[in-house]
Length: 71
Image (cartoon, rainbow, N blue to C red; front, side, top):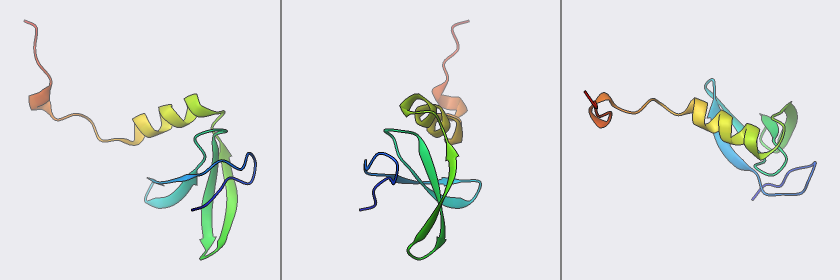
C-alpha cells in the first residue's frame, strides 16, 4: 500500500489520460509514477471534493438505455 507524502493517508490508483496516477482522497494530491518505486507530485486537487469531481468526470457516461424519459 502506498501513502501520501503530504498527509500520510493511503492513496488510490486511477487512470487519467491513459496514465496511471496515485490520488490521495484526503488532501487531493496527485502523484505520477516515474519509475517502479519513484513518484512525482503532479497536481493538487484541493481536497476530497476535488478528487470526487475528478473521478466523476473521468467515468464514462451512463448508457442511453438507463436514461428514462419523463415525456
